Amino acid sequence: MDFFVPSASSPQQAEAVFTSIAKHVKAPEQAKRIYKVEWHHEGIECLCEIGQPLPAVFRTDETVLAIFDCGDVVKICTPNRGAIKFDPIHATKADVSNIEYFN
Image 1 (cartoon, helix red, strand yellow):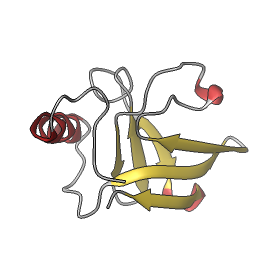
Image 2 (tube, one colour; image 1 turned 90 degrees about the vertical axis):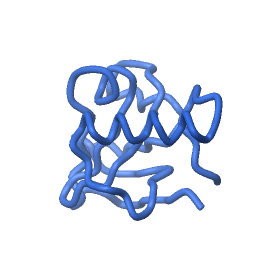
Image 3 (tube, one colour; image 1 turned 120 degrees about the vertical axis):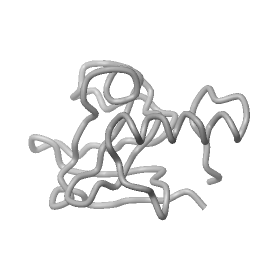
């Protein structure tokens, strides 16, 4: 899968949006960009994938815009959770069972 950001109209806009979200959530530079992450959240196996809605456990149908590897945690960002306001969703690396990257 090639890198994209949902709703971005060009690769340049996708880069700009990704960079802006990264700055907002204080994510380090990403050597590889995450496409999908699976982890256990409160005993439930969760899957977040760029362009897809959050799992039902989060009680919102917001689309995942970006996922960042931030050392001990993975930060999952949606429009209201990390991209524009509020904090992103955190998945502790110890709870992560799978990460897939863009090509």
